[in-house]
Length: 286
Image (tube, rainbow, N blue to C red; front, side):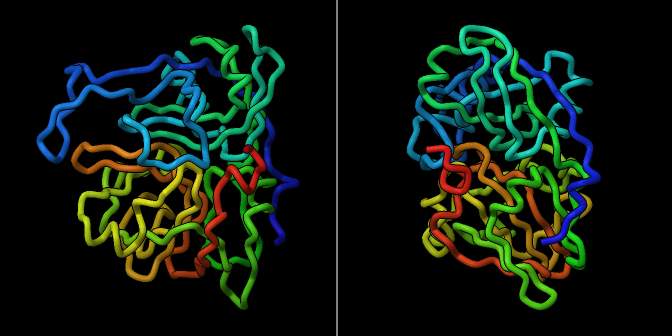
């Protein structure tokens, strides 16, 4: 595909490893009425990475590998916007200095960027270690692709997604198709260039029909009838493709979160089921 990658701005960003967080009430009451205390967002999560099930861990909104943000909220808004999935990250402080990883997702609300590193590298990392990101991707555009818009995507990653042209449509490999009517938290927000929105998995027949219980962190998914062009809305015939950025949740309106990569209001994206459409495979992370 022809893109405008030669005109994209490349910048060095910096953030710090964010500490694990809990809600102020300690207990979170799930949609089933059960109060729980579980590991959640933030930290260096040694045994959770892209390629793992979004449901298998005793957790809530768990973020794979390393969660990063800037301490200044205003600067962090730029950090979470300009860092794109597939960007190279480098540890620039602490015992793991010099080690490299890759951005795998963004989590809205808490405003974290998730970065994958190997387990051996994460064992040497501590809260507060500085992480640099070689940010490129904001403004990326596919030439002659109709109304298809690109968000949060490193141009190198875009080229590795296996996208093919078929007439005026783009065929995009995805691991799963998701109906728009189960999308929850994050719906309606205009911050598509950062953050995510969640797949609700509380209706058992829908989960079985679409295989939502097989979702993995890092999966490419297509959300049917979802337009993310100028915010996250329901629109019949639209298609949005994104990455599963964080794990499942028992909280009402929440679930595995999806960070947007591609969207078309008129359905110019044709999803093609490919079970290996996951960042762990695409970027050879595991």
